[in-house]
Length: 233
Image (cartoon, rainbow, N blue to C red; front, side, top):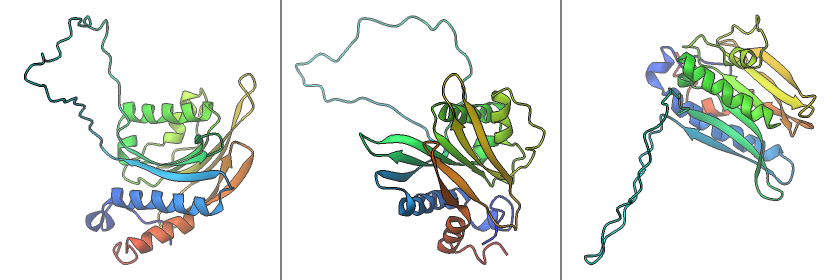
């Protein structure tokens, strides 16, 4: 199935994009688990607009004195803005030998990842941290309602001028190679187009073996399961 516009009418008026992303991530993980080598597994990690309330509660007996710490921390020496990544739609690939170790990650971009300079910078920093830990990456951005390009943000954070990646929607695969003294990043970038087929992109396992990440198959399967064939018209 060719790429639909999930972020503009008519489809955005009858279906929620986050429900599609949630299902898509699940089907991508399921597809990978059918082709990953023995000792590897993939699982989705989806979080939208998280707010965390932390509370500690314990019943106090009548004869007990409620906890009252004597020490209090001083006032902070500085307070600075820190954008939080509240939206995550990712598929994480682990090597299970010796305990699960993260080896690859697939990121499905959300509108919140692209809406402000601060959140775009935070997302690029997250991707850069993965890559510098020798974790293979794939990014898929179908958010047609926001013009920013997070791949370009990543290259800028690496000190690389980018004059080609102005596309609002795209897919990109990254392969970190080398070591601490002589490392480099191999990139497979492809623009996407509404009404066009999605590409198959390489997913590198520990930078040594590439698996085909079949975006067309997982996307079509999700559209069928979500009954989107006629909803976009």
